[in-house]
Length: 152
Image (tube, rainbow, N blue to C red; front, side):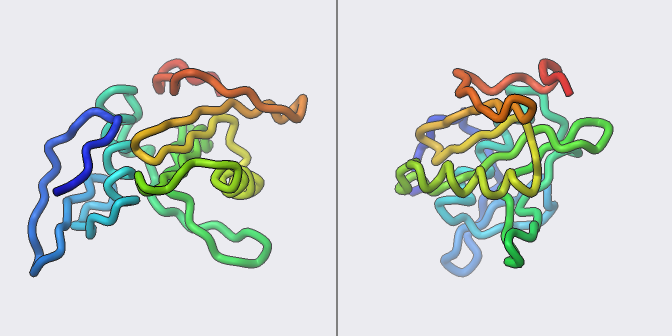
């Protein structure tokens, strides 16, 4: 049984592939094995598209990035219609507590991406943060803005 999350439910196309559950990923257009982290990522993507108005064509999943010479992957990066990155999201499994280490990870990734809006979620708790690069500070915000509210 897949764990219910604190994100709106979505009728995923789930199939049992020889004992491994997979779901159809609308962004990558292929079936993906459902790990706890992937379950969160897929729900968050559907939340972005169906509840926050983010165009699915502007969402990239598990994009590569180089950090200190090492290859890493960003869970979700969202772009605006000009191709600029506007949102970076780090997803964790529901069993993973979101702590300073998690925020440090997304901050390191953002040293490469330089995105003004960050989100961290384990599917049960979600944190949103605006980065002010000019004044070198950040502010936690209550809710993720809708796509049409983001000023870039």
